[in-house]
Picture 1 (spheres, rainbow, N blue to C red):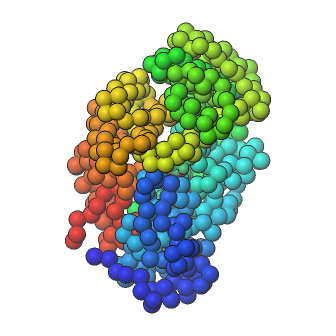
Picture 2 (picture 1 turned 135 degrees about the horizontal axis):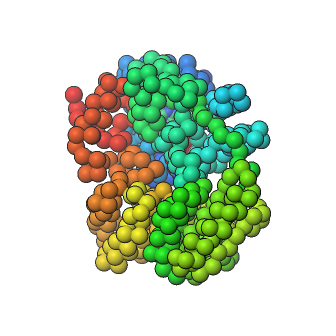
Picture 3 (picture 1 turned 90 degrees about the vertical axis):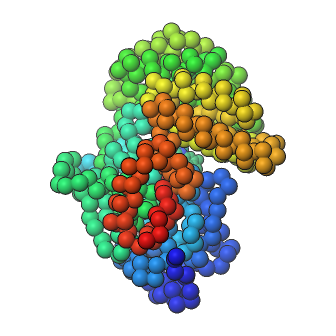
Amino acid sequence: MYGQVDAEVVGQLEAIVGKAYVLTGRERMEPYSHDETAGLSAWPEVVVKVANREQVVAIMKLANERRVPVTPRAGGMGLSGGAVPIYGGIVLSVERMNRILEIDHENLMAVVEPGVITGELHRAVEAEGLFYPPDPASQDSCCLGGNVAEGAGGPRAVKYGTTKDYVTGLEIVLPTGEVVELGGKLVKDEAGYDLVHLVVGSEGTLGVVTKIILRLLPLPKARIDLLVPYDNFQSAAETVSAIIAECIIPTTIEFMERDTVKACERLMGKEVPFSAAAAQLLIQLTGQRQEEVEADMDRVGDLCLDHGALDVLVAQDSATRDRLWAARRLIIEALKNESPVHHMEDLSVPRAKIPELLGAIHALSARLGLRALCFGHAGDGNVHVNLMKDNLPDQEWEEKMRAAQRELYALATSLGGVITGEHGIGATRKGFLAQTIGEKQVELMRGIKRVFDPNGILNPGKIFDLPAQ
Ligand SMILES: Cc1cc2nc3c(=O)[nH]c(=O)nc-3n(C[C@H](O)[C@H](O)[C@H](O)COP(=O)(O)OP(=O)(O)OC[C@H]3O[C@@H](n4cnc5c(N)ncnc54)[C@H](O)[C@@H]3O)c2cc1C
């Protein structure tokens, strides 16, 4: 049973952050009652916009004493309800903690606050000849704090990995209000359990991240993008395995099916290249030397054609590149435009299993009579399956969507995969975690949660429910 946010608590919060940064009215709190997860919302009792670590410490101490739930929030772009305050309480927004504190050339590291917009860090380091690879497609709205909490991926994960591969240090405020500094500007760190990477991907349930140390790379100097159409999805999926088997690691291998591309075309109101093709791959190759990237392009182009590609469109300048990427960048908006009620899954399987996964999804969609639009990070084995309500009556939609969800999870697990590759368990998938990783692992996770958060006040109801103590 949680404590309530009464007038006294509001007064104490105002004393901590200043009256202007405590929101209580419905209209001002509305943006904080949801994230980008379709169909999920819950009202906070109060929203607090913090400016620094000391304020987070004071709020966590107050909340822990009063047993008030606290939901951390950064950009609010999450797709599993992580920032939605399902038990009310305090939404703690880090949006004002938005400074890039340091770009350290000697160590190739950046030190940032959690409210820095991801795309702003990209631009800042690129202006200095450096590179921060993780690039969730929401990069101009999401923040690094949210990326750390979700272990966010993105199109460049094929070659460069995800957020977890770049975090070397964190400052976090524990639910009890204590501050701990984990890791540092370190390439190597074998001092005890790897708490840095326990917190990365913990979905705001173990601590509030107040500072982040990120590894940087040299900015690649050469880049070529390819758009490759196919007349069937299997050939497109098989090409992905063929490229990887050749030990060519593109920066990006994105996959879109015709229905998804057509939805983007309808939203844009103009024609998209190869939109009649059954499937498309969008491949990006990068490197330090133009000749090397061109050699990879020739080999990848041949592999695509050998595996049934209908054409290979090459972009070496930014205008053509923008044309190739236009549809991919708009997919999530296009899905909303297509059917405001829809449900997105984020399955992750070994990449060689993608053809099997897509075949089974199509069979499931046909059997249930439920439109499923697929796209995703094919080079990572990560497929986003979008189940569309369209004109289905509410009850039929609910039944079919739930049946499809269960089958999709069983399918991903049977192929050696998991039920989410990057969007997290959050509030929307928590009932299914044990099914995919087993009860023992969930029990270990619950034990870890209790050590960090003995009163269960930090982002309760996410990943799993804790039994009442
Ligand atoms: C159009 C679109 C495209 C997307 N593309 C991708 C993609 O390519 N790859 C991908 O991985 N995801 C993608 N996402 C999902 C989303 O952008 C990511 O999950 C992102 O990391 C969320 O960051 P945020 O700042 O918006 O976090 P929020 O939504 O605010 O929060 C996400 C989680 O982080 C926690 N959190 C936030 N700040 C802190 C903090 N300081 N300390 C502790 N916990 C905190 C919250 O409690 C919550 O659990 C996409 C979303 C949209 C809408």
